[in-house]
Length: 345
Image 1 (spheres, rainbow, N blue to C red):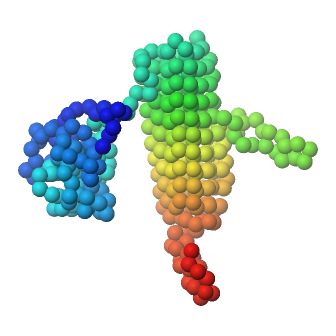
Image 2: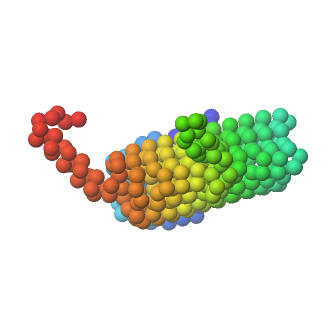
Image 3: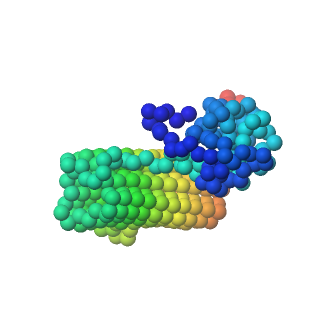
């Protein structure tokens, strides 16, 4: 359950209000006026809590839960124990996320209003109404920050950077050479807009190439802790609206992500590789440069991508191949090892 030292829920809310917030329907016989105080996992929830069931492997926990209310798919409703009020949804996990945000909206990253006295803000910078600038923040010349954005302690916002409205920039982030949309969240330690890794090899001494592009980030993007996003070498590095980047993701210069892409931890994408919309990539995958990854493609964790991936393709392995081929190779290799008398593992 959320630790009250760190998470103070809003509410309590009635089931009617919760259902309206998350787009669920109240199950048969549910008392719409029943009050719920917070959210909790199935195995920890009590009568005052809301929980959810999405993954069938947790049905045993669902049948034994003490939760006061639970969000479930209609097909799973019959497994509910007596006394649990059901909120029915075709997408229980999404509905739970909306309900949890109703109890726990995004926390402020700056606790005081206005600009902290230790912050250094260039007089040519423009701060929108309701902006909060934390301790030891540096805001450079010509910066534009939209209304109600929050810049937490120790951040550096370089000259000319633009941030839209309602952004949350967590502590120790540095941003340069970037134009960033609204409702963007950047988690601690991220580095955005630094030089890309571009140089001309030469035995007399490598020649670094000036990186003259920008980073363009759309609306409703989340960038994880210690992620690094290089600015373009000439054309821009682009992150489409709705993308989610996990911690320690690295995007090299000129990388382009379409809308709604999901990149999990420790992924590296080499320069000038382009993703379509809604690409999903598992952790520690690596991409060679100048590739095309089509819309809706899915890449397994730890894959090495050295060629283009078609739209809708599912690839895995190193080097990556279509998932069916990867599984076939794995089975064949295991069978060969047994014929040779090699031990498993």
